[in-house]
Image (cartoon, rainbow, N blue to C red):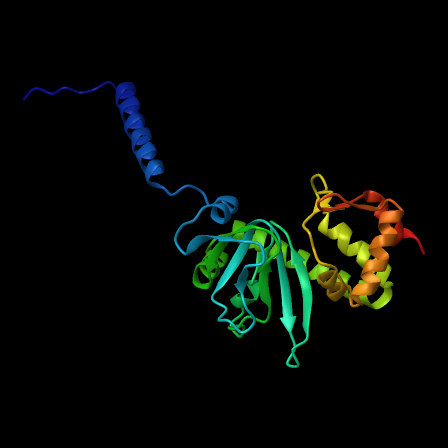
Length: 243
């Protein structure tokens, strides 16, 4: 019987090449690593894009809480109505924020607020079941979501301190600066979406006439301008820093 034996070195190279080819095939079959940004930007299983016109309602107080929304573009206003019919604005959210995240809590099955588009908006709707799954399975997304919740909690505490200890004039200045994104990463947005004085009054707990008085004062001092939109200057910080 004839035998054809390969040299040892050649056998080793042949085995390595076969292993490498197998590894390439194996890697090609593996799913790409999870990317939170892609998850929030692209529609997929349990995720759909939602476009809203200005003043269009995203969801209403008392609706079934069955999804979380991520604001890709635009601004959203959150309001609540008391049993006596009094309405209050509790938050103004810009792009990069989640809306309706409380639906993740087992006991939270009805919307506690109404979400309305202040401007034209694009949002990613994520079904409750899908976002719960991703939070459990993808640590990268859980990190992003926890960071958002912590930032929201800090903002709520700051709002409470502002409401308890600052004058209505300082509260108004702070709201305008927050809307213009001063103090945040990236370039501030000097021109902010048009917001009625009634909404601003609801947010700072005062009357529309007081808001009108302060806005006129800010404009005379050169802190803000009206040029087809509300333009906020960094000099408005002087109102907050001045005792």
